[in-house]
Length: 222
Ligand code: SAH
Image (cartoon, rainbow, N blue to C red; front, side):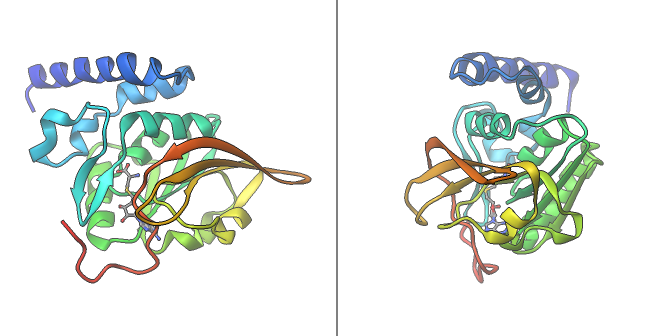
């Protein structure tokens, strides 16, 4: 893509951070920097390029969406990440959230249930040089045992209860951010912190996510 175009996208990205993300209260400097850095336009379908930096979700095929930038920033901030940490994401989708995480920590693991999306996101992340992200196709309900424990886990699709395997794979002091609620409706975004004396829960407000699926859809919607 021409340098001029990249500059235009960089300006749009800065505007997105200033006018929505920062304006709506996300203040963690590292998170804001990551949002200013990741080229979101490389994660949206060609037809939606003009909306790449608008503050709403966009379709990515198979009935799935790339989340709204503000929500990506809010969830990322709620993970309280430190450089050097290891993070698990459930719901790779376009790979955008994984790239944002990869700007902030050493190791990112991401699981996607729809094989076509898992493959295209892996390719995209590789092309963009995010070599600290490891992806796999599978049901993220079970987490990724092989690389547990994780300092933080983010779920970008909505289960109707907290998957116990994810809690089990959380390090002590680890944070789990997950929207919980009925499929097709609104959910509550929760931050769970695994402390020595148990799991603490903090309500982060109402959100709307695609459901966490328990099997590969036979004919995923477009
Ligand atoms: N984080 C993504 C947003 C993806 S939308 C991004 O930045 O683009 C949620 C994704 O979760 C969809 O791609 C959907 O296919 C996936 N998903 C749904 N159920 C899942 C499951 N059980 N395990 C892993 N991924 C799942």
